[in-house]
Length: 345
Image 1 (cartoon, one colour):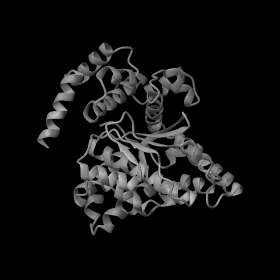
Image 2 (cartoon, rainbow, N blue to C red):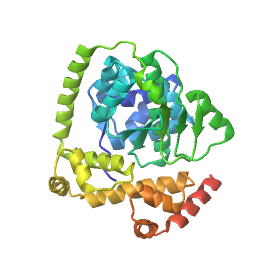
Image 3 (cartoon, rainbow, N blue to C red):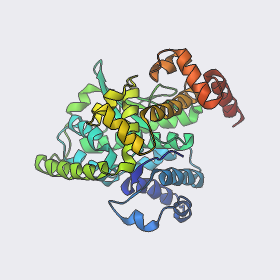
Image 4 (cartoon, rainbow, N blue to C red):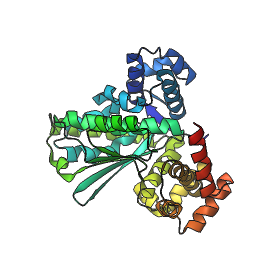
């Protein structure tokens, strides 16, 4: 299994709080995931990503809630985002807060990366989940997008809904789709290309409830120190590169030099550090392409040629060849196989 990095304890606790609010004894799920209970009492504690993925899987089973991702977001607190949550609280506007997400996101964990794009008077905030388990991915994506929406409402002290929510997941039953729209207060587009909150660019100027420029500077200095400590952990370097690759892939780009530049080093240094971990840029790129291709073939109706372009392949033949070499199936056969499994389920 590939290394999934780490998750901060505050990010983990909202899922546990939700399960406990449903009368679930979470001790067994925590033990099943191999998590020491004492770690969950440490504000700066961290657990392995594999443990977090296992925990969410267990809680999904225990709660038997098809909307656990959405419902667990109701337990989000400023501390759920580690020091990043308090940084966002100290910003003056929503725009300032959004600008702080990408630089400090890793303090919350390695569960995924965020990209932000402005176009045609709208802002597109997209989250790229790093966890491979398809069930966990769906609930985690729901949780992250719903948590961001709720937290933004609280920060701005007003309930301005997004313009639209886009989700890669397949179209659910009508009554489930209605619950998504009631939760977000806007249209929810399923089988989309990415998992995105779409909102008017006007929200960037919304003032926040308690801006504090001096505290913001102090918190950012503290966060930068924490980031430096994380960056010194060599076991995490491949996770950092993987996250940078996902950000580039969101724009259809797969250039090693741009990934290296984003990490503040040369392509040669990047490759050397990966070799020290027994990995390589191409290996990480291939793994992420396979992960995202499998997700898009399973949960979207995108044409195979469009998927190839989205994943940075030069043409659909290259994508076809790469995917078959890794899975033994053509993209079309894989899509048919997954559709058949869904029908049986």
